[in-house]
Image (cartoon, rainbow, N blue to C red; front, side, top):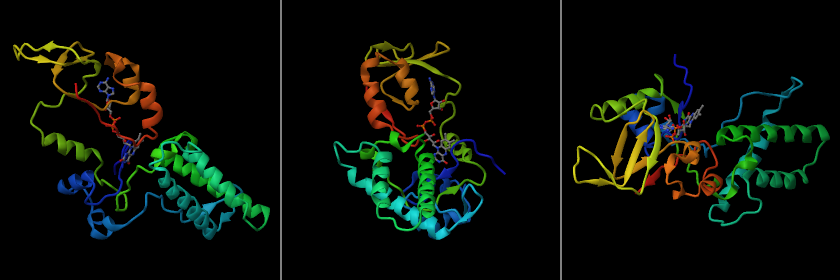
Length: 265
Ligand SMILES: Cc1cc2nc3c(=O)[nH]c(=O)nc-3n(C[C@H](O)[C@H](O)[C@H](O)COP(=O)(O)OP(=O)(O)OC[C@H]3O[C@@H](n4cnc5c(N)ncnc54)[C@H](O)[C@@H]3O)c2cc1C
């Protein structure tokens, strides 16, 4: 067996997903993941319900009640798409929006206090699951307006029986030898300059990638995909290319947001 410590799943494994296409091309997926039937399943991005749930007292919770609360929670999550084009939203976060809507719903709940408490506990649990899905400590930290940007492709999530790394290994093997360099931390990317390269006399390059071991790579264009923490620490010189605070506060709201920063320098 394989124990993955990082990415494990292909989310939305269907023809519109390039990761799925490559994995299928390289023969890395099982029969079920490749089946037409699996590719057509629409999950809407919502995690499936547990087959059994228990309260902290050890009592099992009615599956109907769990399904009812999940249906409410996911309908509210789906409603957040309405704010996609909004320039300003009140409330500003997904968490505050959900809590406000749940407050409105609870006002119309009938039944005994114990059942109401149980319903709220189930909703709290769904909040926690959503935090895991969105890679955040709190849904209050996730901006409402861009939340609906996520497109969930059809297909029931699948895994690589032999491990995700099989895919990157195949991609690397398909490239010419020596075009990839590993264990080469980049110290600074100097941009907007005029750099020379001994092997290309007379040519000037606007970018210079300087590595921690002193090696330098002049370039016409650089695509930077390092984490934001590295960008914010003065990785790019001069540093004023982006207002890092703006970048951090308005563009990124979850671990799954992959942003390619094209430095057309
Ligand atoms: C535990 C966990 C499980 C996950 N599971 C899934 C999953 O099942 N399916 C899924 O689709 N996604 C999953 N994700 C999310 C997915 O792994 C990320 O979204 C994805 O890896 C982001 O890719 P990236 O290229 O933007 O960044 P990264 O993969 O973080 O790549 C950034 C790279 O930059 C390098 N770097 C940083 N600083 C420097 C420097 N100074 N010089 C040179 N290199 C540098 C880092 O070493 C790293 O290799 C998971 C994430 C985690 C943490």
